[in-house]
Amino acid sequence: MNEKKAIIAICLAAVLAFSPAVSLAQGTTTFSGEAVALKASAAGISLALSDTGALPSSGGSLSTSVASVNVLGLASADVLKSTTSGSGTSSQSQSSVASLNLLSGLVTADVVKSNSSATCSGSQASTSGNAELVGLTVAGQSILVSNPNLSISLPGGISVIINQQTSSSGGTSGSITVNALHVTGPSIDIVVASAQSGITCA
Image (cartoon, rainbow, N blue to C red):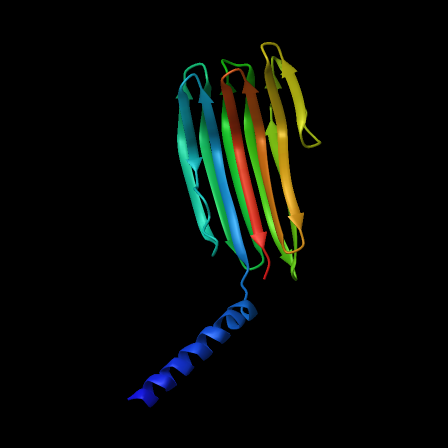
């Protein structure tokens, strides 16, 4: 009986000793992602519409849509869509809205879209992203967007950031968030078409 116990103990010790090495050798690529068509908080109102939620680290695909939204004086939009996915060597997120109107016409656009992606090339991670805004006007002025992170200051302490991009990548992991529009001001924070993608390469 004691011999059996001793053999079992030795076997368990061997398994415990070698299992970390085995799991490290079989490293897998992990993913992150989330897309939200409209996030807003102002004067006690807080909402997040067409939000995919967080992508599992194992990947997969999530999508959601909302036909329309109208919060009087704050935001209205149609056809809010968001998707995020991760598989193989890449993760991607997209979000879009149509017929956007923020703050009683202060910011309007026909179409607002964002895209982000994170990719592994071997064990090296890289990220990319962009925003597309059609028919954008800010305080009645038509705005053409090319470079990321264009910031416009308006009276009343309101700031509009167009094609806002934040990213981090180094070695085996990378992450990027693209907010097509980000409007802030006293007690106001509105994000339109947000797409986040991340990856950690095996």
